[in-house]
Image (cartoon, rainbow, N blue to C red):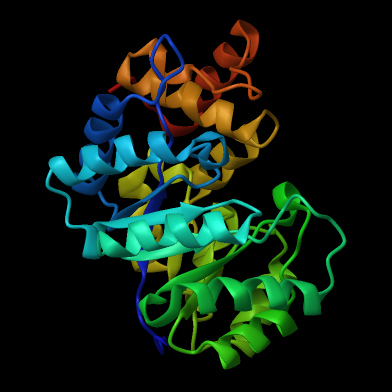
Length: 298
């Protein structure tokens, strides 16, 4: 499914809160999602990298998804679902559940457990995935995140997949952090929605034909991120904050700042094997945030 020149807008790669027993907390998630959607986000993306999606089991995913349904979210417009499992059968099952709920789209990571896979092998995995979804396959965003998956999606492989499955491949989320890769995607696959994960490169990408972002920074500054996309103008404060966050474990830093903004320390909890920032790190990133944004806790 191609979307020439279509605006995707801003989707928050929403963080997942956990309670004291390390169970996903649907009440906190829904409240956070409502705030993001009311303050600049066009949609949320459940179970992405920032949401620790690979740490969540099927039952936990179902609990959080049902909470979003019960909260009245418009899934067709407001909810994308992340898929990050190497087993193609599980990827298909999770995707079918999300599509049955009429989600806006799917953010699909490559099979990350097995390293060194060739383009031919990765094409075969994706072909099995799309074939398994059958006629239901639609609005899939291929997820290029080599720093985490260690399984890159080449520009050529994306071309093969969009040609073989034109009704299913909607776009690419490029979280490589390499502007040269984003440029290559924009040049070769302009008919797809090219999304950018590195907020520091987002305005330039939009100026050159990018459609928007699925990003973690939207958890913290949805209004600023929405303006950045709408105006295609760089924001020095966003760049500075990202620079500060990437010096620390990124997901933990984002959650520490959510906890700070919401005055809710429970938000800082990470699902093992990830760890929360220590007190020194947390104080440092909060100080950086307030200095950069001139912000106080919400």
